[in-house]
Image (cartoon, rainbow, N blue to C red):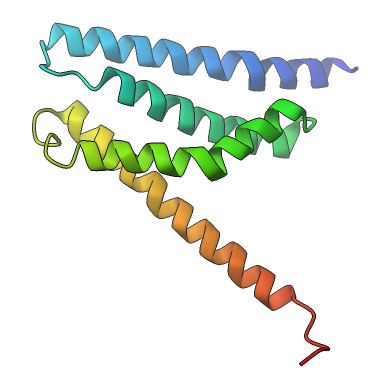
Length: 136
């Protein structure tokens, strides 16, 4: 294993997740200082984990070696995350005006659903176009 591979692996699997965790903790402190009522703490943690997982899967695909953990993360992003983000989106449809944190929670959950639908449609179109047409 070369030094470049070690640095790449540490950056993808250690530095980026720790940076996301620190940013999340800063956000928690900021919400506490602003005395936000009914803070969307759990929802924001799930959103951070989902988008962070998406970033890790993309970076692993581009720069790292694929692993079983990357496969599990991808499995969650394809099957679990749309359900969880849909629930967050639905739950915050009435609370999105309480604070900027509630609004961002609502918007980020909705954005994931939109991107997910677009990617699935592109995938299905690609499968159709690559299909065997000799049987027609």
